[in-house]
Image (cartoon, rainbow, N blue to C red; front, side, top):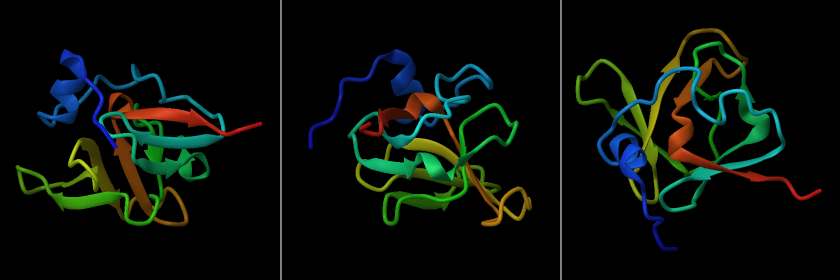
Length: 121
């Protein structure tokens, strides 16, 4: 699986662990059925059924595809960063204990870190 060429903004977020502006990402309000994959390497990360509206301004998921997402301590040590298991591309952060969903987990993911693959009709 090859890597996509990333533009400057994609590089800022995916390679340099940046954050896109809230409520601006193309997938924040997406409610279509399908799979969200890593923009850099195309590895599947999340299914649309795990996406929910958290109101935080970024796409939120309460579960990941098993083995797709790596959790690691953020550089500041206060949050848990999530990266693609396949290519280490920065996705965002994961928060637990907010009691928003039954899984009690919120993956807060930058839209720019993902591509959406619609379900086949």
